[in-house]
Every structure is written in C-alpha cells, then in structure tokens.
Image (tube, one colour):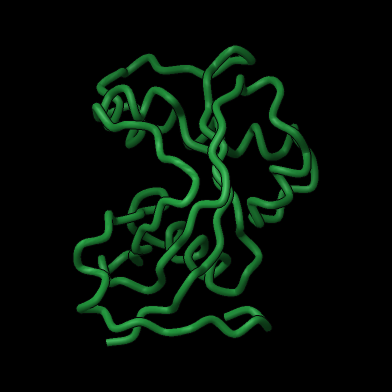
Length: 152
C-alpha cells in the first residue's frame, strides 16, 4: 500500500460491488494491481469500443468497484473520481503519468496501449479481428483512488 493508510473492508462486504479487472489475468494484471495498491496508478484508459461491444454504460464519477487480481480475488475497493471521453490523439501527458505504468512520453504510452488494444486477445474480446486505433479513436479516461483494502 502507499504511505497513506487506507481503511480495510471484509471480502464478504464487497460481494455486491461490480468487479474491476485491469487487462487480462496474468503478469501484466498483477503488475497493474500492485501499482494501484501502492498508489502509483490512479488513472486508466479504456476503449469506448469495449463499452459499446459489452453493452455497458459508461462509468460515472463516484462509482465504487472491487478490484480483483489474476486469481479473481478481491484486493481493494476503488472509488472513481472522474470519467471523461475524448479522442486518443488528445490524451494529455498528465493522464499518462497518472496511469503509473512507467511511461515517460505520450508516444511511449500510446505505442504500449495500441499494442495491447490490437493484440489478438483484445481483438477477440471486441469481436473485431481488424481493430486498429488512430487519433480519432474514442477512449474513456478514468481517475480513481483506493478507498479500502479488502481483507479475508
């Protein structure tokens, strides 16, 4: 956890919260969960196409979710502070830095994200084998904080 202590909550008390999963299960998810728990990652970027494909409403500020690790175990309650939709070509460097993934430039961040968004797994998840991102691609920018750590 970060230097700032967060309260704890019992796992049984988060059963009704929507599940929050970052990327696909595996080492990358584990790395992102660690960055969230230690306070380095306070933002994320998703494709608008994901919400459309999954018939999910856009998240809203104030939303609470339960963050799960690669083993689908609840580890924290996240509270979303802001949500906005913009074009990929205008994402600001500060958002990139708040994502806490170590990217030092917009170009580096974009290359990493486009690689993920055009990966076979993501294209399958979108049911779009030819998905590609460009400056006009709509993305959902979210900022959040750890409201509580989940304990069993």
